[in-house]
Image 1 (cartoon, one colour):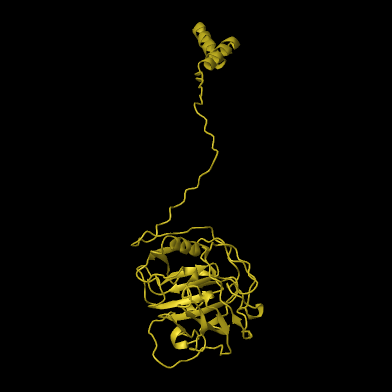
Image 2 (image 1 turned 180 degrees about the vertical axis):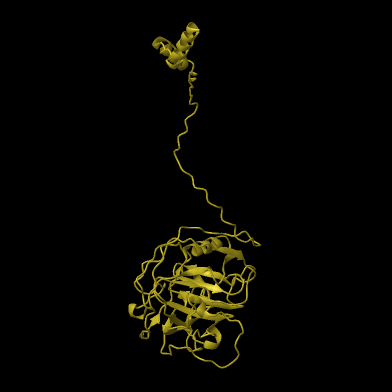
Amino acid sequence: MIGILLVLLAILWRISKPVAPDPRMVGLAARATLYALPTPTPQRIVVTQVVVVTQIVVVTATPAPLDAFEAAPLTADIAAPTPLPEAPPTAARALPTNTVEPATPTAEAVQPAAVRVVAVSVDATVNQEDAPSPANGVCPISSSNQYVAIPVAGGGLDHPPAQHADLNLSLRGYEAIDAARTLINKDGPVDGDPPQLDGLFSDNRAPQFGQPYRVYDWDWGCAAHGCRGGLLDAPQATLVVLHMYAGETVRIPRRSRQIYGGGFKAMVLYAEPTRITLGYTREDSVANGYAVHIENLCVDPNLLALYINSDANGRSSLPALREEEVLGVATLGDLLVAVRDRGAFLDPRSRLDWWQEN
């Protein structure tokens, strides 16, 4: 019995006092665990092509084409000029009576160019004191505006445009007169839809008139292209100065009637860098409708270029304008304006005709 008890006691002591692990066995187990981890597989990246960016291209939307017309449109697209600031309107100034001599006719084509103006830019002899408020400006030589030529329907010229006194007002000349520089009321019938001259202004304001003039008549039988006659007897004034803001944008005199689909109201019958003649029919003539002469205006260079191109190509199409389209800018100072109906010069101060809402 004693022996059995001794064996049990030895077993219990061994259980309570476990054998210390062999350090060699511990190291062997650690190495086995470490080398059992998977070895990463090396990867190789091969560059097959190198792309070098040398230019950035910006893609913009293609502008929509202009409306189609019966004849192929001619357009001009040039960079826009820097706009000029507007200034308050100048006060009316008294101008002494003087005569503006007609220009010497020329058949050379006029090219758009910068124009430095000291007095009024008219192809005639003008005293500086008689000029309409010069602004010493320079006409723009570029523009972003686009214009369209429409088919001519009727009319036709018997003389070169630059030598045609119904188109080029500077050939006739004009003389300053002593007359009221205000709107006048006339007696007699009034057309229901004449061109309204307040459309020339950017804000359709009432006019502030300067010096009135009387235009010379024209004798078509005295030479190959005619020659100047005497001053027109009636009406009292046939040309007048309109005071403008410096650099003001100028548009056509407005009217309800279209002359061509798409809102076209007037056609350019003649243009130079500083003057333009508008017709309110599609005829290449002033004989059968309204016409407006505008002097001392910087005609938009793209509009001028289109007119020159149309004239050189036989005038079967001529530039046309909607009311919202720019005719030019009053960079040179005040404008001189004359109005005609079926060839006859009328008084541009008439409230009932040309200023019905003023």
